Length: 207
Image 1 (tube, helix red, strand yellow):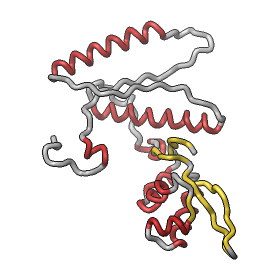
Image 2 (cartoon, rainbow, N blue to C red):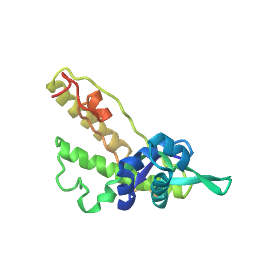
Image 3 (cartoon, rainbow, N blue to C red):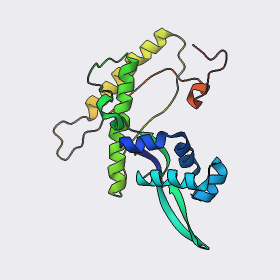
Image 4 (cartoon, one colour):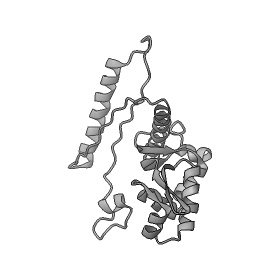
């Protein structure tokens, strides 16, 4: 089972967004049958089987084993990943393009870069899994609390200078056998806890 799988096919994305199928995917982090799942989600076994076959058709769940119980063969299924991300490729006609309006201070451009990151890394992960290879990546995630907007602005300028110097030091346009790597650095306000959970903000968290 993959840790994270990227959904690129529009039909698979549609299937995963159905609330009941999404619930089944969450339950199937551990293997289960239509019978065991029916008891958990409150649906008839036949209905669960229908949803499972749809998810299996799009590669979101896979068969682990088959068990014979009397005259019935019970299929034990498992999600193909612990979690899923839908790539902007699934909405190809309307996916954001960072090249349209590059602006370091634009939240829209930041989202476009993030979408590109999901799309590109998703394609690389899919290829690496197919070839049974590891994908070399590196990421940093942290949090900084600024005392003022002026400090935030100064931080951004200093960060830009540091990254520019580092890129200049290591970038070699003519390196034989070299491979291009994309570098994305982002700074944005931290989302309040309720927003990260998908719930409504409590009084005092808004703004």
